[in-house]
Image (cartoon, rainbow over all chains, first blue to last red):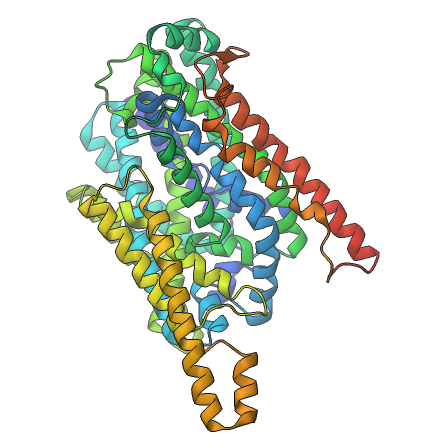
Length: 488
Length: 70
């Protein structure tokens, strides 16, 4: 067993131990397990809300995009900060509604606002289906990280099993408080590792960071601009930012709801929305490392392996192990949040057991099932859900119109127009992603949203006309009521 | 409820960020401080989101305390 692998496994055990220590007494019901006692202060909420920012994508993906596409990778800098502008206004409203109606899932919001169990069921199913590939990505990514830094395939597999078991253990034992505990360590590790890497790697390969860009300007100047040609053109850059910012600002990712609902008051959410954008600038560090790869590595190198290949060549084994721990934590903590997000949707909005103990049992059972499926697919068929993963963000973004339509007292859309719009949006995303018609490099999710809103608007007009006609036929009092309440 | 025009301030960083690749002095091969201009531009405007939201929040609190808010 080499030093890197030993440090990586020891680090995963420490992460899990912190997660297990997050538990505060015996968990009585699903509410407490999912959102604690709704008493999370600014710091805990901060790390939970920031959780989505630093995932395996931060380590592997962003550096890879910079390696292949140059400054086009800067699309990853603004989208989460932009979403916090929306969250500044929206999160306090959701928090108030959540406390009043006791939401613990995203589907609870849709179910209560539209007064429809069908709506809650559909949103929950969408959440589970679209998040499962994302969970598998975290586990497969973790295995790939360990494999890359150790150079041994079976050690990658072993680490996937160990990390999954440890993650399931602390999620079941401690719930959201466990995730919060591990999130502190994860962010500290990720930022520390990135700061060291962004100094050490450019120094080792080029003499320093500014030397990297001087060399890029001389040898590959095309990497310094976003042009109108190629896969990462200006349209791609803009629509990638837009779909991600819309998805995050309008809370379309179900696993991020507990962080909002668990806050002790709405000021915590406003304060975090103000300050969290500063935190996201860290994403510039892996982009800079990707540029170093562009001048130091063969252009045929797999983009996702750029950061770790450079790390392995530039730093001692023990520090490579520390980087592996940071990267592993960036997989384990989001994986924990994803398990929670999916299991609560199943227990609360799909299976619907009435007994609180049975509900908790269904929830815990699904944590094991979801993690087990993701692990088995990661070990045996790592590409099985790859197609579905393409739909995760664009597909979930189709919840945005239905979310916005009932955010305030003045409801803009009724149940069926929203459902029809969502169906149209997901269908368009599916068609554009897999049939690949010539739509330039416009993100499939944006095209889906256009179809979604158009279908929902037409359906709402039809619904409104039918409601008025039937109300008019029933008499003047009912007609007046129909005018006031457009929601079906 | 009357809304203060201050709530429109966040539009500035939104427009600045989304238009970045169409600004010829930003989307260029030349560097600022030794790094790509797009890096500097995006980072600057991301940093500006915080003071902008602080102003909006201060205005909201002032209106709330003055009985003019929600």
